[in-house]
Image 1 (spheres, rainbow over the protein chains, first blue to last red):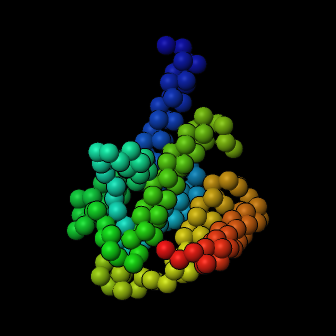
Image 2: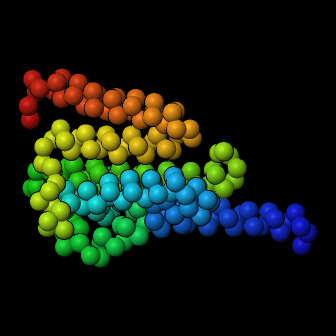
Image 3: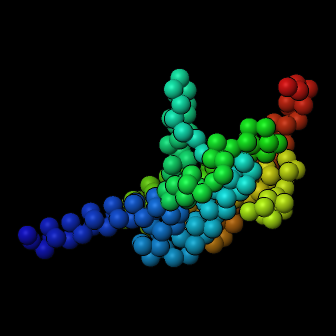
Length: 133
Length: 65
């Protein structure tokens, strides 16, 4: 393999590693790409948003038959990677508490945390391919 | 978690403001690279979310559920 081909292979691997790390934990992809300060801010903001969502007794969505929007909601919440998986395993009530005053807020916080992390995955990709300075 | 839950706000305005704060910080860092630009964008998004939320609440006031 030529030097150019090896470099291209490394670049391709770097962008995929960055995206996977970004999904696993907020900010990890940026940390891998040496954006340390941004990585810390993203980790704190997304994690706090997610934990507040759980504390407000929001719902960790799952796909429900006859509820097509639940597919989008599940996809959004799954964007938080290990936080989502850990919460599903450790939470007493992953379905949330519909009667709680803060339930709707909790759902909004959880969905937002997931969507933020999906944006971070795209951002990590853009940085890795050199599309973003 | 129980102690943490006791400290959580149940005030609607405070929950909305906290949400606006987190979202504003996130997008200020995502969309701007320089310190001053980040502060400006943070201020704009935060103000838009809080003022917009209050405006929508005011418009919906005559139509309670």
